[in-house]
Image (cartoon, rainbow, N blue to C red; front, top):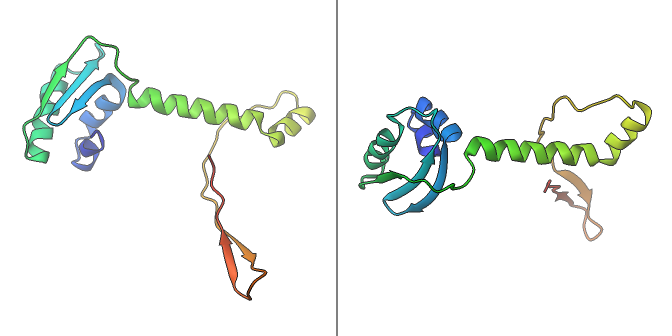
Length: 134
C-alpha cells in the first residue's frame, strides 16, 4: 500500500509513511494507523484522498491509539541489525577478529550472487546452481 505513494510520485508522503505511521489494521477501503506526533497534520487526510483517487474506491484512514506494528523505517533498521549480527558471527569475521582484535564492520553491502555452473554427471550439459541467502 505504501509503495503506491512512491509509484505515484508522492515522495514526501511516502517518506512520512515510512517514518511516522504504525499500521494497526487494514481492510478493504479502511486503514487504521497510529501516527507519531512529528507527522504532518495533513498526512492522514492526504493518504485517504490519494488512495481513493488511485484505487477508484473510497478509503477511510482512521487514527487510533493502539500501538500497531513497527514503522517501515523501524522494520528496515531491525533487518539491518540482524544482518550485522549475522556478519559478526560469520567464521570469516571471527578469523579477522582473531588477527585484528580492534576490527569492526563499518558497512554491509548486499551483492547479487551469480549462478554457478556445475558440470552434470548425466550429460555433457552444464547445470546452473543457484545459491540464495536466507
